[in-house]
Length: 162
Image 1: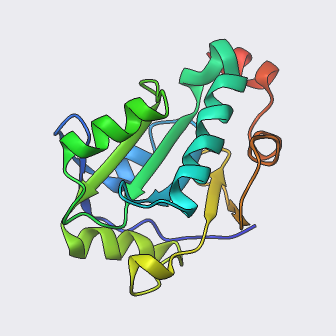
Image 2: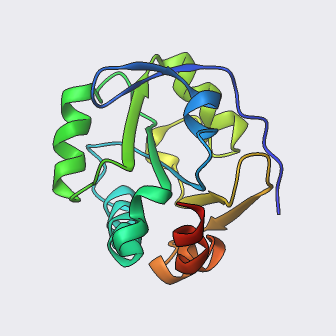
């Protein structure tokens, strides 16, 4: 279990809305977080496919979990590119993609210890927080949907929380 200080940075969602990262993460739902970029051909598509499977396996309680993908290449990843990328992985409304300034992206990457200085050096990691204020679980390497789901509240717990 890990504690991360969520930085007070402004990001831009794929719908073009400017949001503060702490407010986005603290909407009451569990969070699944990954850092991606849309032109990646190795790590990111595999990570995004896992997140797609997570939302699929959550079924009718998928809206009870906030899946977040933050771009590590905000200079290229516009909201329009993120929308197209999200469609590729059939992202539902509970799975949002974010961009912003380079400083904001790097601030978020540093806060979650995924910053590697060059997008080509990034490594796969998925971070999960069961509830606001809870500690984070970090899965380094290629997480499976089952590993991610095991760290989230159960489907029964999510139904009860609705």
